[in-house]
Every structure is written in C-alpha cells, then in structure tokens.
Image (cartoon, rainbow, N blue to C red; front, side, top):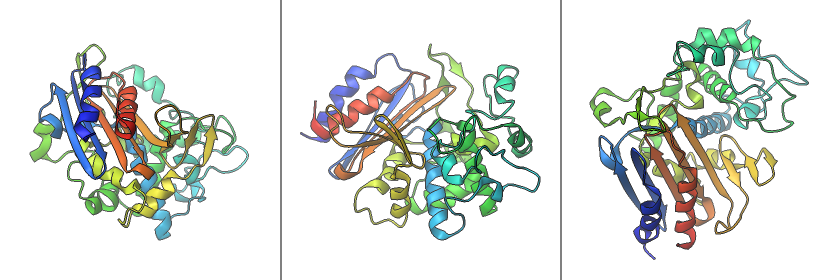
Length: 333
C-alpha cells in the first residue's frame, strides 16, 4: 500500500474541528505532506513546536559531549556563573539528569507560575531573561534526589539549553543553527524566524479557535522555543534511521539510549519511548509539544525507517493522531 493510501484515511477522520493542521509522514524512502484548515503557507507554514525543542537540546548535549566540550555527568553548577548554584539533594544534578527529566527539579523555576498568572499569562515565559533565570536558580530547590524517577521539568530542559549555550559562548538559537540546522539543511527551524519568511508563520489559537499571541521562552528557549515546519522535522528525524550516515547520527543514537524507565515509558536525552504494543509492535520514540496556541507531535521507529510529524496551530492535542499515523505507516489501516 502506498504512503498516501495509508495516511489519508487517518487524516480525513481526525482533522475535523481544527483551525489548521500539517501532517508529514515518511516510510520506505518516500515522504509526503498534508495540510488542512487556516494556514498562511499550506504545508510549508511555520509553527511553534513547543517541547519537541527538548529533543534538539538533547541532541546538542550528546553532540557537545562527543566533542568533549561537556560531559554527560558534568554537574550543572560547573557551567553556571560564579555565585549561581543549583541546590543539591543527595548529590549534584548533572547535565544528563536535566536532559532525562530525572533531576528532581520542579516543573517551573521559582516564581514563574506566580508571574504567569498576571500580567504574563498569555506569554508566561517572555520576561525570563538570563538575569531572572540566574536569580531563580538558587531558589528552585529539587523536590527529590536526582536519578530516583522521571518527573517532567520545563525548567530543567530550559536550564540545560541555557548552560549549553553559555558553554559554547553563544545564544541557544545560534547553537541549534550551527550544530543541527545548518548541517542538516533545516532552513525553516528558528526561534526568531527571519523577516522574509515571517508571512509563513502561523498564528496560534486556543482550544475554542480564538487567536492567541505567540510564546517567547527567552532564557528557557531550550525547553520549547523553536518554530519549524513538518518538512524540516522529517529531515531531522532521518538522523534516527538505523544506518544513518550523517555525522550527527551518533549523537542522535545517544539521545535514544534509555536513562530511566517507568512502566511502558522510557526516557533518553529528550526523547521518550514506548514499549511495543497493539499495532505498534516496535518501540516508538516520540515527543509531543504545546504552547499557548499550538500542539505538535514527532515520532519514529528507527528499525523501520518510518516517521510522522503533526503540527497544529490550535491548543488541541495531536498525540493520538500522530500515533495513528505511525500505526498506518507500519501496518496500514
């Protein structure tokens, strides 16, 4: 069964009641894109990808570790300014802990939740520049000893992106562009989309379809600050094909290696994975994302060379749709 014949029935049943939707799929060396709804440039529209950004941050960590710029077991405090220290509980938190959500740190830094209520509730991270983040670090205490269990932390991932950029002596966006986007030819993946392409940037909508402003994650950009296209993300996911020959493939493989598990779910450096079940009889690697007006999904099965991307400019989840697309790619409907 051809790629389009597998995916289109899933898309037609699942794309209703959404403001705008882009789906990308790849299998057997073939790839295709679909779009529905209100989008400025169809399938080539640029959308916020939210927490899929965390997989880019994990890839940066693995790549910089392979180069010797950092080590996975480096204490976070080694790469922070003098006088700025992450509190410890049992042992120091490492860069690997941050990437695998096992640091024990809270979901948000001290003060962000309160400040997001007013006046920043529609763009809650926007004022979190480096100075505010560094001031919050000593006050954001771990809730448990690192390594004990996985607990999702936007703060931890954002802090990781911040310290990696600081180690490289550049901004987080520039680090992603230099080490991932340019080598892979990802022309539409940015935090701040260049002026000529800004008409292609989709506006976000809440669950009811009402327009909402974009999000700006400032110093916490490593947790969810990137915008991209489905086409760019399909290219990015090729790094995870078994036998991929790109220089970044070794770093990508390191991000898939399990650091901690709970039930069917395992966590690597950014990427999550699900044990085989139902139609998905292979381990599936995935990440979802969400900002104020967007939802996203990226998933792949390395052994089969299949990948799926779903981007929506509305705050309605797309994870189920993404998993159904993967199931269709693997086994048909």
